[in-house]
Length: 350
Image (cartoon, rainbow, N blue to C red; front, side, top):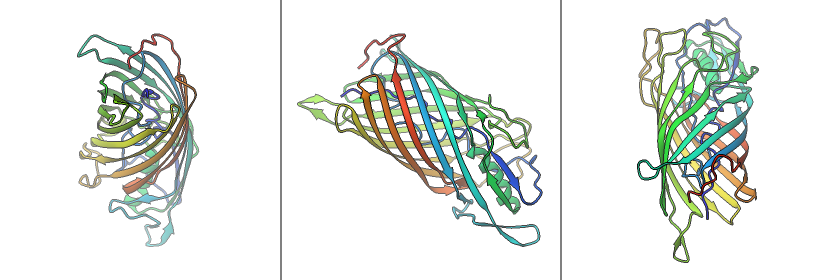
């Protein structure tokens, strides 16, 4: 069975959008936040997205994501349900983060003659969305650290930071695929220090990523891609935040999962992974305990179907988080479309 290439950077921006927070007590929003969780969010892409594509040419992805968060977990992994105000009074921390993101990706694959006939991959992915949990993390971090009381809700929408994949290479064999390269998030979304209508994070993120695939099954003695096992690693480095002398610490993400085609058109997938802060925040404006690092785990379940074989793929996916430290919880429902255009190539690779 062919391994269909559905999305290279599907919704890796779903959290790079806008967020609004209003506090019941006065808060100095010009303070840099102790929580900057980076751009890359694990568990969003489909398991086979980074495998070698079946053919060269242009692929168009339309991912629709509906997200909800209603819990925040502190540095000890405990849910924060109430906050102690400046006068010692307890007040509930009310969270209601909901949003929608539409991600349209244009992905181009080209066969090359370099490094063992590697396939060159390029992707350009903007996102339009209505909520940014990354900025929610920052506001809640101020509330939690400074012991202020507050409500958090989402209102602002717009185009967030754009992701570009300028250099990825992919190799294919009968039972293995391997894809690796460099990509970055550019701070194109609106961002000003202390603003309540930011739609970006205000800094660059650079990623080195590698994805390995193993196809263990053989049918009638021939290798089959009906089942795929995936393991990946992503290392993220960040630049200084606009307007403050703070550089968020580097991060590492591991992702893994299994995909099984039950027929030529029907696919079931289970994925998991973890995102860790591995480097300390740095800069003269860092006022918090730099030794505290956040983390989050995730699990996801997906069903996919090709109503138009080899050309149009549809899928539904549900993801939830666990093991959060200094993070919001995460619940995401995705309804996605992938269209194999057949333009600018369509030379078979597999």
